Image 1: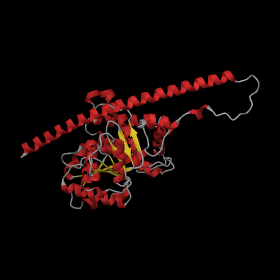
Image 2 (image 1 turned 90 degrees about the vertical axis):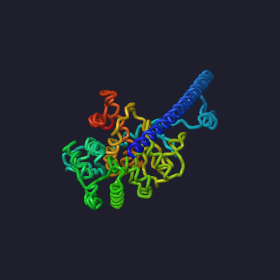
Image 3 (image 1 turned 60 degrees about the vertical axis):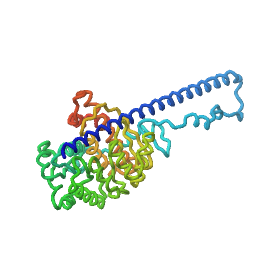
Image 4 (image 1 turned 30 degrees about the vertical axis):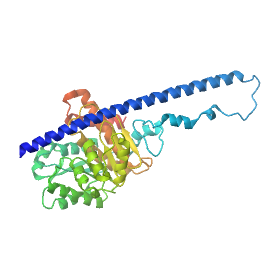
Length: 407
């Protein structure tokens, strides 16, 4: 029985890597096409500037020496055919960092996303008391998976939360406690009254992260379901990752329409969710459209599709985070993202629309968390290279945060 299971796992993994290889080839072709369009646009701009220069030169030569009389001549801008230029640039070129499918953003607007993240970060002051800058709950951790909830919880603290709680199974509690004395660990997730035990803490938490190290045991999934329902009633921001996403793919209605939720799927988790909601496979030629449609189908909650570039959507806009990271893909990076996102989601939600310039606060928080994770990855890789692990990334959170948001 075990040999059959292992063989099935190997076969599944081989199919995944073959599929991933095909996807990467398609992505390379797409990039080449984008590069060609960019060159085309630059050539057009060069021609336009040359035309402008010659027009201005000709006019300067024809200007009389006496003071000019006011006339009704048109400026050079009136001579441009904007319809022809738009047609030549179609399909539209995606500008990295951020773009909207419904509104045109200037480069200045796109650069301002980092400023919006900075706006929601609470200042450090001696007048605050413990807990004001964030009390985050991590729901996950079982006998097999103790690292994931630790990485999420410790990342939340490193980003700036004051307290980090882990709600895990009894078997996992002692192990997670041994990783760090900073974490508050509750061994309740597999108890008969687990939902009630966690519910007692929800009024004290500012956000919850569901899924790191959760596993797929039916009892744990059922308890996670109950915790999500209780958190929704209290209006708490919810980040769902890892096996929490497996639960959502089986029961999408559990989170559908709750716009204070953020889902953080990787490629396979995104495909599973997309097919569950839209009954169609993911269109590998339209990644941006797919993340937009999935968000809409889920009721306009925030989706973060992790990948070579992180795509973030609330069903109205799509932000693209392509901040430089590295080629190293060690396990646990997603847990760093979900833990830091739990903190930033609370800060952005608390700050309100005046601090986010009317933007969806959860889009701003997700962009900040993605950028931070990538910066940690980049810094750790510079030091450790191929041997880099998520522990190395966690050690970089402080300096990465300071570089991105406080300098």
